[in-house]
Length: 87
Image 1 (spheres, helix red, strand yellow):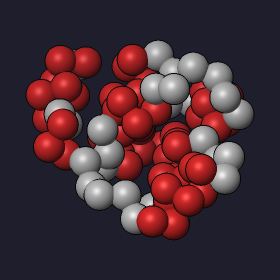
Image 2 (image 1 turned 45 degrees about the horizontal axis):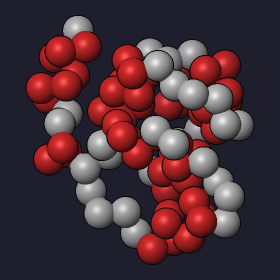
Image 3 (image 1 turned 180 degrees about the horizontal axis):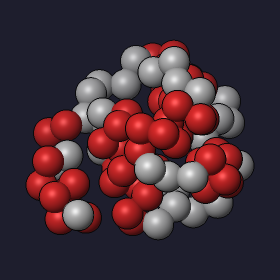
Image 4 (image 1 turned 30 degrees about the vertical axis):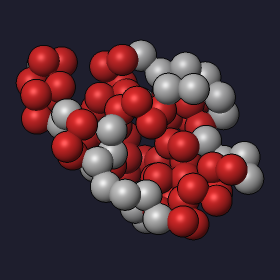
């Protein structure tokens, strides 16, 4: 499954992040939270769509490291490159 995500959501799947998202990240929001809010998704909605638990998403938004698999799943749902979530 991880290979399927990598193939389907590689480097060409990202969008240019708008200035307000980049500003939110610069002001201290985690990239995951900034993109999630930009996409107007709750943590629960993102969890349901990605298959990543709400606890992991909350942890990542608070600064915890995501597994490579969780990075790929979240990036696929949000339409960004997974390396955005690597600090």
